[in-house]
Length: 355
Ligand SMILES: Nc1nc2c(ncn2[C@@H]2O[C@H](COP(=O)(O)OP(=O)(O)OP(=O)(O)O)[C@@H](O)[C@H]2O)c(=O)[nH]1
Ligand SMILES: [Zn+2]
Image (cartoon, rainbow, N blue to C red; front, side):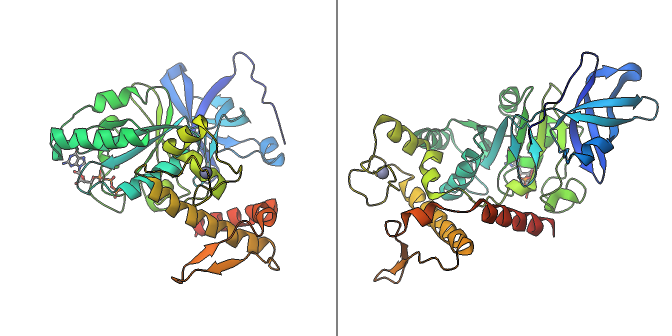
C-alpha cells in the first residue's frame, strides 16, 4: 500500500525518538515558541484506520500542538528511506559497530558475524575498535592491516582515555546511527561520552535504559549534541544471520571484489568446490564464509521443508557423518521459499522477541 504523505509549508515536522504504549515522543525539527523541542504525541485515528504504523525514526507531521502541555497529534508519516526490523527503526543511515581491541579480546569470527549482519542491512557501516589504550602501537597497526584486508577501515578509539572519540563523533553528525556490538566492549561508555546527558550505567549488565535493555522491542533515539541521533539497540547484539546462501558472498567485501572483477563458471555458484570459481581462495575470512554458508543452507533447507513438508530435498551423509546439502538435486525447490512461510517465520521471531 503506497501512500504519499502530503507535507505543506508551515507543517510542524519532527522525528519520533521513542514509542511507549500509544504515545510517541516527537523531536521537532525547529525549536518552537516557548522553546519546546519535543512533544508527546498520539496517533490520529485516521492513521490507525489505514493501518499506518508509527515507529521510532519516522519523520512525522504533527498537528494541534499544545505548547504549554507539551502534547500533539501525529497526522501523517513521511515515506521511509529505510527500515530495520527487530527492533523496528525507520530512516537509519548507518550502523556503528563497536568492538574492543582487547578485553574482551578481539574475536575475528565474532567480528565477521557482526559485519555480515551489518552488511545485510545494506546501510553504511562505521567500524570502531575501542580500548585502544590496552594495546601497543604495533598491535594496533597489525589489527589495522588485517581488517583493511577484509575491506574495512577500523576507527581505533579509547573512550576511557578520550582518544579519537571526536573523530568518531564527526562520522555520526546529522545521521541516524544504530550502535551494535558484543557485551563489554564499551558501547554504554561510548554513548555516555558522546551524549553526557544520557548517563547509561557502565559495566552493569542489567538495568540500563530503564527496563527496555533486554527486550528487542524497546528502542530509543538519543540526540547527539552536535546533531544526529543514536540508537542503542539490544536486539542487534546477538546477531542471527538470516541471509540466503546466494546473498552471503556479497556481504564479504573480499568476495564482492572478486565477483566484480570476474565471474564464476556457474551463475548459481556457492563458491565451495565448484569448478572455475573466482571467490574461493586464500583470503583470510574464506573459512568464515564457508561456515556461514553452511548455516545459511541449513536455514534455507528448514524453511523449504516448512513450506513443503513433502519436499524431497536430499541430504547426503558424508563419511565423517556431517550432512551436506546437495543443491543440484533440487535447485528449483531450494530457491522457492514461499512468501507466506517467510512471513510466518518473521511473525514467530517477533513473538519470540516480545515474550
Ligand atoms: N581500558 C578501557 N576500558 C574501557 C574503555 N571503554 C570502556 N571500558 C570499560 O569496559 C567495561 C565495559 O563497558 P560498557 O560501556 O559497560 O560496555 P557495553 O558494551 O555497554 O557492555 P554491555 O552493556 O554488556 O553491552 C567497563 O568496565 C568500562 O569502564 C576504554 O576505552 N579503555
Ligand atoms: Zn564461485
